[in-house]
Length: 96
Image (cartoon, rainbow, N blue to C red; front, side, top):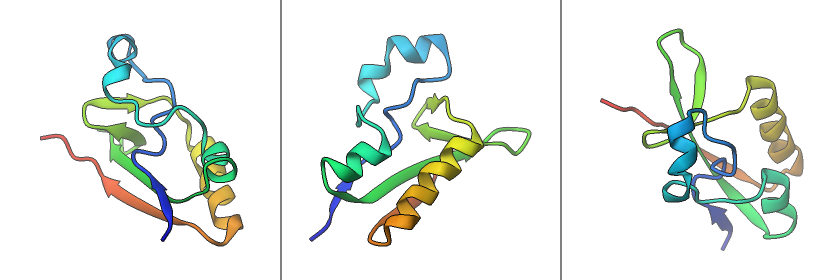
């Protein structure tokens, strides 16, 4: 059985000031991806994304959006891929 983390990227800083005030309600993880892998043995990661009106990808959890640029997200995904023993579940976090 593999260990997984729920909303794996919620250790990031929320994008909006009001989200920072309420981040304790949406934060599922407190440490970065490498720490989740190395110290906690996480092998299944949960990535939730949505796209803004300009088509840019945003890491999200419900109404919360997290501050990460594409280069950093790709670096995290490369890190996971290079381990060779991980899974990433990607969900389109749609708000209607």
